[in-house]
Image 1 (cartoon, one colour):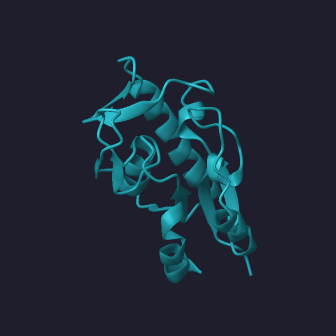
Image 2 (cartoon, one colour):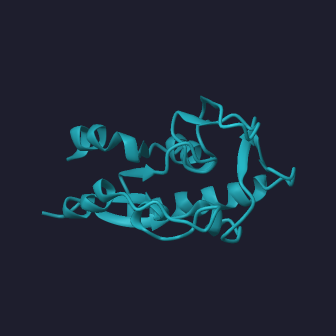
Length: 149
């Protein structure tokens, strides 16, 4: 039987592409390769941002770095790249990094760089969802497996 295809935030698979140059390998996400084909993505890098980079947060429809630089276009380009990858691989869902300005699903930082969380989605998560692709975070693997596993 053919395994379903999932997009996965590359940092959760151990790729050091986060803003701080680190990675966040998640054993439960990596274990999903037993049931799914995992396609790594990093919308921020795919959108042209370097690693490491100044932290960014969403402020309404914009994405701003802590120093005030507007990187919205980078985030939109990365989101489009994620959507193109999802469509080209016929991915049925995505597991994305929680609270990220690109990948957050349902909860992101508020744009004040104070650690405060608000309801909302990252730019890539929002674009994927609008295209009908189910989005989960690493905290929602159980939910993903209920729906698809």
